[in-house]
Each structure stands twice: as structure tokens, then as C-alpha cells.
Image (cartoon, rainbow, N blue to C red):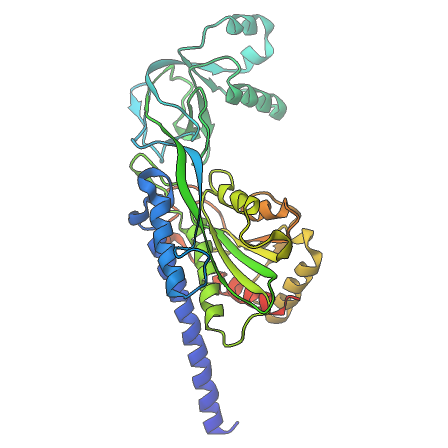
Length: 422
């Protein structure tokens, strides 16, 4: 190769690498910002989701996206249950650490006092004489738990768990043993509290607990989706979406939500940044949608599909990004088998370019915001990078925990797919 030509090609490659690195810097900046303490876990304590919306609106303005509102908002309201103070749980004389040793199930009401613990065991379940005594008990001031010793029959254990979780015996509250503590959010309030306790901390010799739970149920909480777009040659659109909300706080313990789902938000805005710089007008109108309320039941995407800003019948494809900050175990295109024509294009691109490793498609999965569109007969997939998932819905889902293993590959795959989609 001619030396000057070689130097030119090398310089060009370095420039392209630099440009991509800048995109990665932008993505990492977004994830670090959104998962910082300033946003209170992007939940409903201290209006964390709304603080995040202000920041994301400013990013859309910086990218010079078009919007139907000056702040890009699509407002709506929802009921939501919160825990503004640290819950307290003592098993006997031992006080447990919230978010580390136990969590409060998110539909729980306030509860304070010292109560007996009654263990549902094999004798109660299998011996009629013992069961008759149990059924006569008044459990209104008792917490019910399962003693799993001897419950080797999976069906019997599942039956016992169903009975306890439904609290058909009218207990004051429920104790559930869990290997992993996965917090969430709920829009309704139960009549009794449920405490999920690390299995290693729940001891069947304990027969007394002390609890202090203070909930705040908020009616008509104001929240919002955000929508920006780039007008294409066609009024038909493709949608890039992600949810920006997370679990907020349980008392003073914050759930940062770096992977879930600051990473997905970063992907959407990263794509917006890329396409906004393109010299050629895209064929499809490109819509960049950020939802709130996903963790509480796909609220934002359900609201959007009931009140679409771009007609659903003119929505060619929806690509939803949820947890794309890892990927050591591969990339999933959930719902991919429901859209075989589009899936074949993903597979063709990746076969030729090897952007991502271990890419797999699944049938319909209703686990994220794509599902709201799929239920309305809109083609939609959910892109997810798979890892050990140990930080999912825990306080350890932090910016520093992300390896961004397949982020670049996913970005390039979606870029090429969107450019080639007919």
C-alpha cells in the first residue's frame, strides 16, 4: 500500500474510533448522571422521576429534536405507594438491615408493634388434627411464615406459599424467605404488610418480631413521558424507546437503576444524537420515547398507546431498550420470533458484521414497555443484554457496576437495522 494512503487510512480509522469513543462518553455521562444521588432513584420519593424528566428534556433540547411540546412532555397521573422512612424489623432481639437483610413488599400498608410469628409447617399441612387446631387460631395479631423443613414436595410447598402470600388466614402480616431481595413499585395498597427476608436471616426458632413500617400512598401522582422526533420523508415512524423511571427509595436506601434503565435511556438518546448529525433525511420519521412508570406496571407505555402522539397504525417498528449496560452472556431480542421478517434482518446484519455475541430471539414476553405496543398489534421488540443479573432491582445497580460489554455492538446493530428497514 502507498505510504501516504496508509497514513490517511490509519488516521481515518483513528478518527472514527475517536468519534465512537465520544458516543460512549456521552452514554456513560448519561448513565452516571441519572443513577446519581441527585435523582433519588428516579422514583416517587422527592419527585425523583420528575427531576430526571427535567434533565432529559434539557438533553432533548440540546440534541435539537423536534417536539410537540416545548418540554417534550406527555403528562399523566397515577396512584403510587411509597416508604419515605426506613422500615424497622427485629427478629427476636436481632435488628435487620433494610434493603440488605429485608425489604418491604411495595403494596404494604403501615404497621407498628411487636407480634407473634407462627410457622406454617408440614404437620399443619399434612395432619388433620394439627390443621384443625391451626384453623381455629386468631391470627389477627400474628405474622405468618413458612417453615420449609420437610417440605420437599414442590407442589406442597407451592400450595403453602400460595396460601401464605394470599393471607387467606387473616394474619396481621406475612414473612417470606427470599434468596434475593428484589424491590419493585405498586399502584395499590394491600390490607396487610409483607416482609421479604433473606433466607439466611430468617430463623424458625424466632417466634416474635418487632416491625415499624410507615407508608405514604399518593393518589394522582403527576408524572410524564417524554417524546422527541426527527421528521423523515415518510409519516410512518419507527420508535426507539426506554423507560427512565426506577424504584426510587425505601426510606434512606436508594435504588440507582444504572442498568435498569439508565442504560436504555442512554441508548435512545445516543441514537438520537447519531441520527440528528446525519446529513441525509431518514426515510422513516424517527421517534425517541422515554417512559415513566414502567416499574409500577408499564404505566407510561400503556398511557402512550392509549393516547398515541404518532398514530399506531403508522408505527412501522418499536425497539425498546431495557438493561443494555452488560452482556457477558449474550443479547436477547425478546418478542423477536413474533416479527420473523424483521428478525431475519437483525440476524443477517449480525451474521455479516458480528456486532454482538450469542444473540437469541424469543417468543412474546410481556416484561417491558414493548408489550404495550405488541398488545395493540404494533410490531415491537425488546433488546436486552444478558449477564448474571445479580444487581437487578437492588441497591447495587450502580454506574460502577456496569461493564457495557455489548453496548457498542447493540448500537451498531440497531443503527444498521434502522437504515436498512423497508
